[in-house]
Image (cartoon, rainbow, N blue to C red; front, side, top):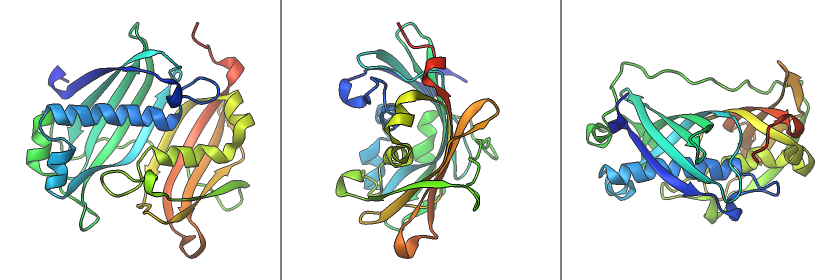
Length: 262
């Protein structure tokens, strides 16, 4: 893969991007990565305003993340984004988050589509939008790992959330990163304080819109292949209770087993 496909920027972690443990939240980590892709698009002349003038917007449909450790308050990072490949409808992108010494902290794979913002539906990726990235055009992009679905016999912890105006982005749908706050919050302070994320897979199924009330459901944590695993679903509330908006699967380590930075 040539360097023309890549874009790197430096980011200084600030206190408001971290949780009470001093680590970057998953939502903020995603925001940092997406910002790098936005800045690459601007540098290539196909940024947000260019897309909006055509009534188009990029939407992420899937993530897979491998987390060695989450960045910490005041840490300086380099964030690299790379356009890997694309087919007619899907674009494959990855992100590398590294510390000041170049050590890899997080590797993120993502699948993007282009949405017609008026019709609210996916369209074929316009050649003028994708060409500047110089990524290979393939017959079919590689698939990412899919999260395991919650089964009917599993015990769930649930919380309800109302979609606010400030949850929306310029595509007029819920900011992608907000889902991660909804996913994690039902686990509670004790679990989140004492466990560290190791791996994340999430698939976005349907669009959450302004004014919706959603239910975030998570299975009780269990040991799977030596790691602690949780399965998550964001679904409709009340009359839309059969609607699934996103599904995710996360693996965790107990905090004491994770090497903390000096």
